[in-house]
Amino acid sequence: MIKLAKLGLNIGMVLFLSACATSMSPLKVNNTLPILTKSKFIPQSEVDSEIKRNGCKYLVKGREYTAPIGLTTKNDLKNGAKGIDEWVKLDGGNAYVLRNYNWNTVDHLGSTQLHIEFDTMVCE
Image (cartoon, rainbow, N blue to C red; front, side, top):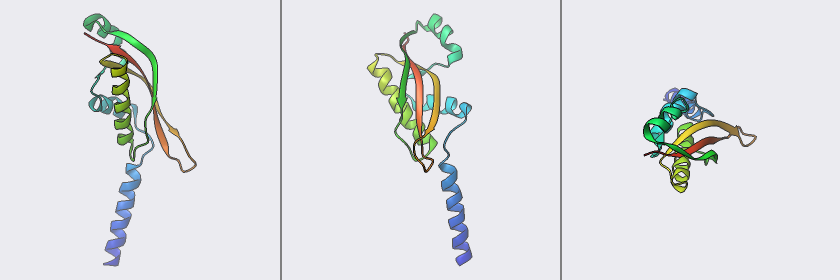
């Protein structure tokens, strides 16, 4: 019985530590962030065609947002998505272009915080 409890504790610890990853791959960010935002996500590679096709125009270039720290990287992204949506709304837009992101180490324990750079746009 004690061995089973130790095994359960070890499995729980592995799951906890894997959930506390400090970053996410670019592909995963680009696939996850658009699902979490209410604003329209425009990939950098499609900005020019969106401007021509949907009458999009830039409202603010170079907007930056540091998201509140979440328990997991997905929670960080959820917090970042909320911030993006708030800025897009405040700027009078309905879309954004993700320019850059990174997780910055914020303490000696290795805790990280998501920093996002994006442009806000309005599209017809």
